[in-house]
Image (cartoon, rainbow, N blue to C red; front, side, top):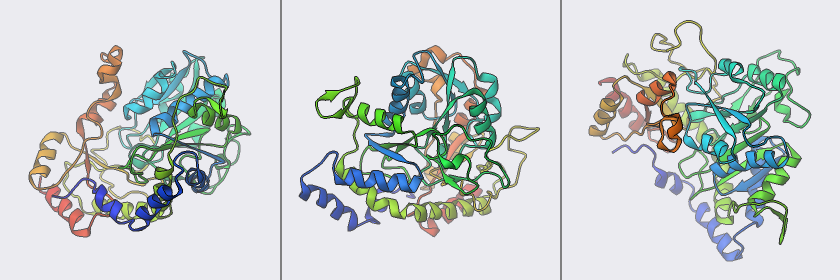
Length: 408
């Protein structure tokens, strides 16, 4: 069986350093808010290119804390609207409704599966306060147009970077500095050099769930931002609303990255770029060798195409090089007979997953939206299938995937 993701093999590839790091924490006898968390926060903020990093319990909490901090800072209030892609994991939406804000679902680009930036402006109202972009499947969702919209309407941009640790975006050659959102945002908004996702917007939520490209040995997450006030408030809220022991300024919650997970992440972080590059190499092999005409391969250009919005007719299979905008957390293909394809691959010993079978607006949790129609989102969720890809995948494994899928 070719596993979709061999987490055990990934973990073993970091030994013995991983076990030594865990033992170091045990021997020290300090398990929360200690040296490992402080060290990881510094190292990850440096890696991302952000001024602040706040380690939290998981990726959902990271997003929840950003919105909650904005509310405490009177930047947002109950009932304000947040534009969010209709095609996303439900956590992106949960973070908004948890804070009694209103999600405004916007269709994705059928080619990239990310938020269709060209559709944002028509959904903006006087109650709109933010845009959440989701770097879905590992591909950066960003553009100069997005920056211009945010500046024009004075909107915050919040990145859901749960799947794209290590991805980057570079503005087009010759772009000027006129799109800078405000004076308290990252230099990436004016820099011609590549900038990591997680440093592009006003704030970003990160997940280190074990299956992520940078995965802990349990739940873990982080907030990154250049905003001093936002960072201070988010950090306090995550610690029972307290920035000083037994002094509680906010009705907070308990969402802290623990020392063991921080120690694990510190071992894994230095290898992230190399691991992501291995994923790109496997993705390139898939692009070059999957020739089944009914398999729709992913497109790494995050823009809307004129004419036919579906990509069946587009046979340019190679991604942009060096395609730093994608870290291939998932390699997602589409097929009109997706379920048959998945069973066929399973019968041949290839494990695949569906990310995700039910879109947020069709979930029982949001039953008030169940009658709403988002045809592009629904088409994606009915057709997508994630093929095996990881930094520990062997050549003969992805070669076998290619041979078998071409015969379907």
